[in-house]
Length: 441
Image (cartoon, rainbow, N blue to C red):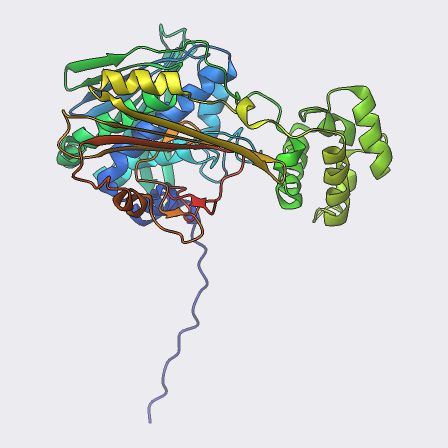
């Protein structure tokens, strides 16, 4: 009998960075199938633009322009720094000033712009382009794949540009996916308009294939919790605080600096004063200790973190729900009236409370609109509208909002406008793409 040859298999190492550049991965990251990706581009870019303006204390004025081969969003914020553009091109890490904190932010995944950069390539299959103009520079980013190394291949070229105020981001839309963009028109325009319902300070214009519409802000000085406001210790669990400490320690190692526990504590709401800081440090025995004391080099000391959080909570007060930012009856009444509703049918309800130190506000509005042929549903979390209805598990029975509305005789074929919004620093989602929120109360 002839000898049977054997194969000694080689173990190959393949970069997982390419997973970000697949349809399957982008669906998982965004929570939406490709036919909704025009809406994902809109939502992520508007969320970022609003956050940038609010963080800088600028009343947001945003313009959206959709052409057959491009989606462009322009804001009047401080402008995206060049180093941020460079950071988002690194697909081996997340880049976010939100993800590690617990706060009522519009988005905190740290991957939004990465999905936007990869999206044109995934749709086209060969290459994708995104252009970012800010702070006197035009960044031209071409996205492809190195088939040999199985990793993203990104070409980044920048040159001087006359944009000095704000940021302009243009996502090139592949011709092969042109029908997808056209099919998204109605929902795209609705989601864009939803932003003006949930953000009284926003002035927004949308140009779709040459046709322009605009909505003015009803309250440019509208008060809300800004992304730059200190977060509250009461919003954190030990796991959340541990995550934030780990993020700071990693960041400090990269910068070659050593942060103290006192510096860390001072960044929280209610703990900027020296007396409060001393009380926290005395309660934990961490006077003059570096933040690295809470880590043995590999893991965070959970018991020390729990003691630190307990001390921080004991020295601060919970945030009142109204401090988060309330859309308000007047604004919603104005928007419903502008939509052509019969204002005699207008109803508004606000419920707010604090649960275990966590403030939350739920606002709902309703009116009959004779100009409509079907129900219009406006839903959102932390002033960002949902592409899908995020309230698909409402109350102890985990019913969907659609079911609840049907029980109240507000079926899909009823000509009514219904709005439901939740503001809360810590929101539980059922999916990785954060498209469905859990509401058990």
